[in-house]
Length: 495
Image (cartoon, rainbow, N blue to C red; front, side, top):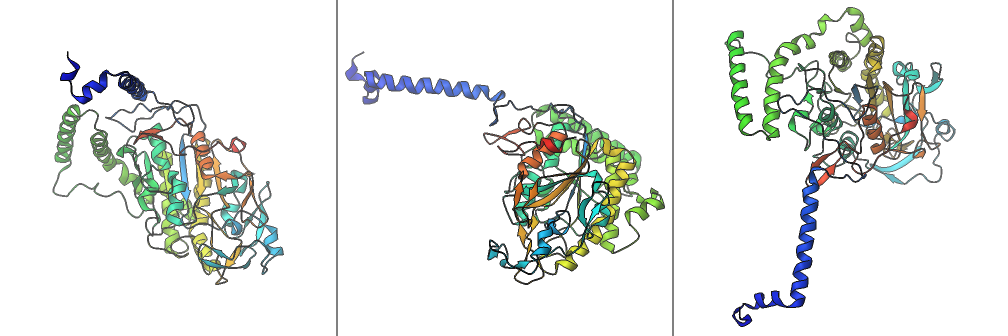
């Protein structure tokens, strides 16, 4: 062919420089194709190969094995929105009394909500509890009495001092919205041994949702089947009742027909995860029509249980929360994989009234929340222990951050403290009567063995038999994890 008959672009392809350039591009494309072909067996940031759970689309809740054997088979998360003051509950700091009313050097002039005041001693006295002699305050005497069962982590710190982002970070591993909750990750990995109740139940406070709402128990980008089901003792799951005009036989015929139609539809679209989740949710709802009424009937509990939990004493909010605690025990007893129990709500602020966010008058507002939370929560833990359920159930008591050792400018409240706070673990797989890490002499900053939220979540997953570096989900070009690209298991707290 005469080169003069070629286009300028064609002639350029024939010269040596053009040939070498195009060859380089072609080889690069081949390399990219090789990488894309390997996506079925990707390597995560940690260098480990992800472990994909083998999920049956027809039964996404079927129990699955973890990555390794672990003591904990279920988990109960007791979450306290609003930021419980660690220096007034579980983190004893004698220097707060020593410097009470003073403003030592180093105290910031301004914190989250404005100017700062002076150091304030705890608003409640601390006393040694149990054989371990753990110092806890009189604000939570019932929980304090169980200190020998708890593994306290006193050196937690977080990335944010805002409640919505703090809740997101604690419960999803990210301050932003749209990421799967801890419960969703666990049920995605492990399913549930209970097939007539949801694998993941979120028992919201009688006052409503926490500030981050359904993000705290959402599925994010995981399949929709793994989001938490939201109900409590006062508000059962919606739309389970059969209309009075429909007989039981007609109802069953309708369900059977719907199951056949859904099955045929799924055969046409076998890889549609949302469709599979929707079908599974309908089938679970049918089973829940039989299981939920008996589950919600707390009148079946003996009077001694109601008295122990406090369903007949104290404020109405305390009585309702106590019923939620009994419901939590019943769900654990039935084998529900993850139960998340909320103590506090915050749809529009709260300031110590609807949750633990005590920016003013902490003496009254924290006391009000403690009256609701202390007796029922302690009764729940004792009840689980008495029934032998703590042998394979992990308890996580958590809040999103702590509170400052000094008062705010108003002189009656403590501001947000993201640099130090306390949570505790109990039950399967963790040490008893043990404290890990320390905050500084005032409880202002994590000082000894600091623990990131990533570490906290990595440890909880480990206790459930899951490697946080291998439990991932490929989303938008990234292997996403609950712990992002961070986190180390706190081995010293493991039994």
